[in-house]
Amino acid sequence: MTLHERLDGMTIGSALATRATADPTGVYLVDDGGALTFAEVDAQSESLAAALANLGVGAGDRIALILPACPEFVVSVFAAAKLGAMVVPLNPSLPTSELQYMLRHSEAVCTITIEGHQGMDYLELFEELMPQLPALRYLVTVGEEDLWYDDRIFQYEDMLSAGSGRDFSATAPEPGEPFALLYTSGTSGKPKGVELSHANLLWGAAATAGALNMTDADRVVGISALFHVFGLASGLLAALVSGSSIVLQVDGTASATLDAVEATGATIHFGIPTLFVQSLSALSAHPRDLSTLRLAVVAGAPAGDEFITDVSDALGVPTLAGYSLTETSSVLSISRPDDPEEKRRFTVGRPIAGADVCIVDVSAADQGVLPVESVGEIRVRGPGVMVGYYRQPKQTAESYDDDGFFRTGDLGLLDEEGFLHLVGRTKDVIIRSGFNVYPREVEARIGSHPAIHEAAVVGVADPLLGEAVCACVVPVEGAIVTDREIVDWCRETLADEKLPDLVRFIDELPRSDTGQVRRVELSRTAEAEGQSA
Image 1 (cartoon, rainbow, N blue to C red):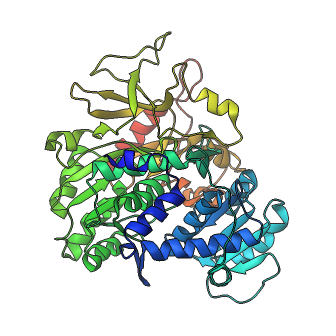
Image 2 (tube, rainbow, N blue to C red):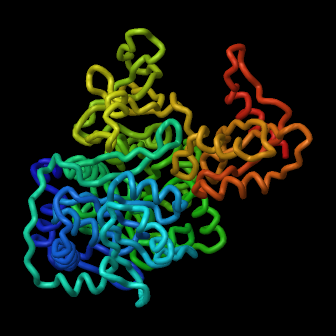
Image 3 (tube, one colour):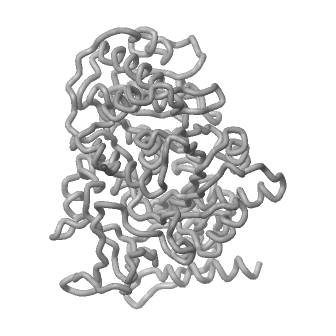
């Protein structure tokens, strides 16, 4: 029986209960504080679920998680699953304006948050935010602070104690019901909430675990963003369904990750290209014993064939590439360890089990399916494809074609052996260190500066970031403005990954006869200037 078949009909809560019963002493989570077994995570999530149920949190409610990769995040995910509630994982590094939008849009009734992270005081932040979030009834804080509590604010440890040993009633969800609401940017850069069901996420988890031959002997490292679909499905849940252990890292730097491999005996190293680029330098400066590794997996951003070879040589293991989308519950296509080396270097492997992938000619009126070795838009349907965009039925409908295939917006081709090659994108997006950056959002912010006449934002190839964000700026005549001022102006409202890495001042933007900005020309010029600098 395949892993997918064993998970058929399960929810995320029942998958944990099954694993905890079959392998109670198996180590699930490893971090600086020690280790937690499957049974311990199951018991703690039961306690937290009971405490939340006592507050009236239940089926269908949204529980926001503003936490780094820590055990509290994991326990909270499974507590929500046991209640039949939904989780809304949010990046703790988001600007206040984006956090407020997502909390309000999701109508989260409870938020579980770290008290302080990377210089941000979340207790102080929520003191300002809670009056502006009418749906938010409760705040659960993770940390040591004992101040500023009222009848709506609780400490995480107190909640575990209060719920320990208590029964609670909950409506068991169906596998097809939404479980996670993950925010991703739309074509305008505005956040869209992607609804993924229990079945969606477990399918994506099983696909990753199956492709990588994950077992209870594996220990996974390199997952530092559990709020991201790859960290949630291919990391946390893939480890659950395979019985593997996952090393939780609040510090996701290359040096810390390599140290974790050596200290924990990790066997699988996940990461975005930026992490592996930094790892190559870190290993040169300080070699580590990486003999326990058996695989490296690169996902989240394009990776060139030479890069795959360099990583394999440095780590001494096969390096696999994956193609991941939030709307497809993480991995859509991935290399396998037994694939020919040429395929592992030049492709993102074969589509996962159950994924029906086709290549469509978007330039043709009938948008027909293209034959093998033809470049077109990648489209997919299957059990991993999202429930839809939360509260956006029109956007959801427009994301599918008449045959029910999801439009990825990415260009690729399927070769004669069924391997998927990524070629480019039909949609205007920059992938910087695994994060999608939509030019229009950055351009709007730069254009609001009083000294700027207009701006165009493009991606340029970068060995560390994959793509760097380059702002091509036309100042107002006679104005005096610096590149640092532009970046600081953007920082007031944009997340760090959206800030321009480069700022070019030009006299005018190149345009086509129809007035469209020639972005390819801007990108090529910026890359040429960078190479000659």
